[in-house]
Amino acid sequence: MNEPVVYTEKMKVPSSRLNKMERVWWGTLLPVFLIGVYFIIKGFFMEGMASTYLTDEVPWGAWVAFYIYFIGMSAGSFLLSTLIYGFGMKKYEKIGRAALLSAIVSMITAITFIFLDIGRPDHVFNSIIYWNITSTMAWEIHFYIVYILFLIVELYLSMRGDLIELAKKKNRLAKFYQFLTFGKKEMTKEDEQRDKKRMKILGIIGIPLAILGVHGGTGSIFAVLKAHPFLNSGLFPIIFIMSALVSGTALSISLYVIKNKVLKKPIDTEMVRSLGSLLALFLAIELIMEWYEFLVGTYGLQYEEMQTIGHMTTGPWWWSFWIFQMGFAMIIPLGILFLKRTRTSVNWILTASILTILGVVGVRFNMVVPVFIVPPFEGMPTPNYYPNLSEWVVTFGLIAMFLLLYTLGEKLLPIEEVEYSENGVIEHGK
Image (cartoon, rainbow, N blue to C red; front, side, top):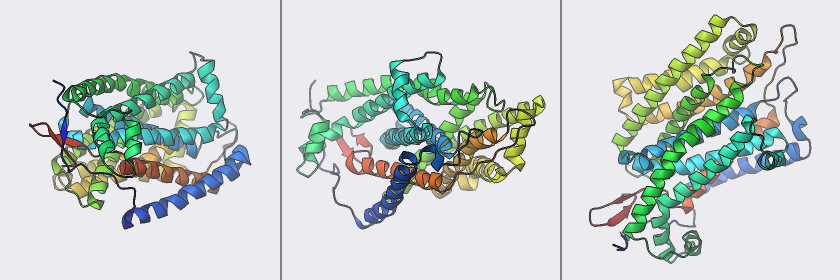
């Protein structure tokens, strides 16, 4: 029963050298990241929060918006991976590891954004040492830690067989893979089955962790803000979760299609169409939820909520609501994925996914900025907020960091899913 799994010689060994396209990619992103790091040192470490346009009236800004943006993409990507490893939907297997990798990198990026925003990231340890169980944020920090560990372990188990095989190859990275395999020399069929069972358990346990803990919990941090009636809604955490599924699915489609187009590899058209249908379903549910959220808010006629909706739809941030949230993140991609002529085209599904990813940025900004611009009491002066140059440069630097970390993961790790044939032979990237 301990028969080792046999690997073919087609197993791709990641190269430590960069081809021309990779050099252009790294040469573009690395300066953006380094400039962002310079502004973090110059602004965050030397000037503190004075380097931003945040005020006492508007304490949350662009970095909080991007924090929840990347949290959403992480939770959505992970939930997509549970369809594969938790429920055995093998038709999505080719994006399983990539979804887990993007979930990890998204979490790292999200936490970096919120560390910058809170100003004193070392205070996070206080919530761990002195855990206040009535604090939503304290619960959230614990959920984040467990969630990241889940993601790392699940990704590791999904590629352990490939790592063992790569450790046998004679190349510059062999020692790196030997370290990752903890000295294990062979992957038996029993090991393989055991890992699959572990991944299934982790995937199923991870569903409530991602839904209720990570993303629903992040939505709860906003929903408990009683001073801001627009956020103080029981539906708000559910909208957060749907938005996560939308952005995570769009991200997985984009990464898979763009990578295969760039590397000139065949694209699994049926899988992309199926993922496009999933994206359309999530978009439709989110649109219905948003409709009722605004309808109930408008019928309530509360001053703060009416002012927030007014600022969002006709105020200085109208373009963020109508162009990004309603246009890019909902109506246009939904139209593309609904029409028969475009919903079967990989290029159109990719277009819808990219528009969704861009549009969700507007969704996240609208959850933060217009809400805090409205004064909590009638008669108080109305503040304003736009991210300044330092905030934008740092933001683009961290987005570059996200892309670089994901690229590094794809470069070093066997992220491309494998397929098994009946005789136990495994082929990589078939």
